[in-house]
Length: 177
Image 1 (spheres, rainbow, N blue to C red):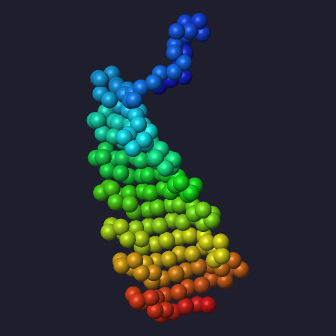
Image 2 (image 1 turned 90 degrees about the horizontal axis):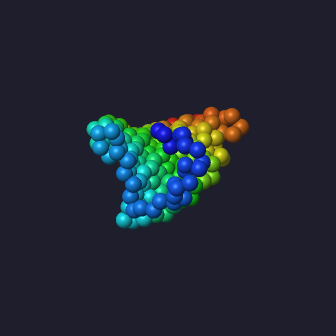
């Protein structure tokens, strides 16, 4: 990129200012197309946008007004495909979306240290959730299209496995142990 490249001796760099201030910076490619934009949005969000050669924004790095950092990645059609953020409480979040831009998988580590992976169907309903909960250890929950938990599989800290099956109204059909 040339950012770290310094071919001039220190004496020749003496006229380089220590600081440059502007409301926006735009870096263009050899054809004059904007490829990088650094600015502060009206709500106070600093934003760095990276575009491809077809003028499509492919990545945005920002820090929200509440202080939470976020990275959004887009496909060639401009659909959001991945988002990585850290919430104000310190919770990291990764969201992966399908070709239509709908969130389909989410990974987080909750403030209590519980890692959790959620998988959603095309309608956005969470259908599977895998977590490692401190009091239960690993737990897998499977839900129906309405979001009702229908099957739960877990292993207790002592190694005892368990399973629970429920009907659409939440009534237990089978449970072991």
